Amino acid sequence: MQTYPQELQNALAFLKEHDDFLIVSHVQPDGDAVSSTLAVGWLLSCLGKNYVMVNEGPIPRRMSYLWHSDQVLDLSKNPLDTKYRNVICVDCADFQRVGKTQQDFSEDARILNIDHHPTNDGYGEVQLIVPEAAATAEILLDLIEYAEIPLTTDIATALYTGLLTDTGGFRYSNTSPKVMAQASRLLGFGVDGPGLSELLLEQITYPQLQILTKALTKLQMSEDGLISWVSITPEDMAETGAINEDLEGIVNYPRNVQGVEVGMLFKVIHDNAVKVSMRSAGKVDVAAICHSFGGGGHVRAAGARIEGQLEEIIQLVVERVKEQL
Ligand code: AMP
Ligand code: MN
Ligand code: MN
Figure 1 (cartoon, rainbow, N blue to C red):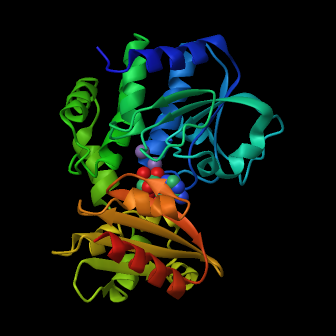
Figure 2 (cartoon, rainbow, N blue to C red):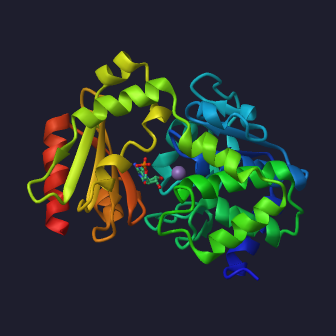
């Protein structure tokens, strides 16, 4: 029995009542975003509905094994010619996280908001927001089971991918007994758990190793050793041939230094904008800090995009973290 049957019922009613859906997730999608997009697509196909899956940009190459991942349209290459009235947003803490895909929403769009970020602001007509969930994939497994639709290995693999990546390989504090029970059920459908861990958490590309090396040479620590950070510039990206998905996991290095409470990665987007990723050892609520900068996330993992020059932003954010320590 699910603990939020009313929300599940409302979400399922939304899917059953309407047709011709647009499914979107957040910019620079992670494993949970991609998997959740596909899981909703699969659920709609089981319900006999039409849908299109889009993202503002490409999905990470190493996720190409996922069921129908090649059908998630990269909006930067394939602009859509119609606008959609029925929209499902997955893993997006606020409306702006959908990025440029919002161009494909009709003015009177009704949105189903499925997410697990505590900072979710409750946008949309129908909400399925479960802050206790480790991943949006966890909520979608609940929804699929609530709808009594039998899983296939393909879709179990996608859901497992979302759980695996958002829990850092079932190691972060969001790895609840429920997550492990779900993972166990998914393995029962033939998911290759060790293979996915190897591919998604162990393997690194050569550019990924090079950009990590560059970042680590710039690692800085606050005097008290409680805050540590690295930064990456467009020049670093160009010199190493790294792409955005190669930055996944770098923020864990400053965060994992013994004694550090908050680890950060500052990625220069362009002349006047920086993306900050923050990870907390537990004492500091980094979601609150990122939220104060217009971003969001979870207590121990959050992000924000901040306008300004790298050095001034580092100073500003480090000061804000110090206030919270
Ligand atoms: P990241 O540092 O990009 O890996 O993100 C860490 C967590 O914070 C993830 O759950 C993201 O979905 C969330 N997050 C990152 N950037 C933002 C943002 N600009 N607004 C809201 N949530 C974000
Ligand atoms: Mn995500
Ligand atoms: Mn997520």
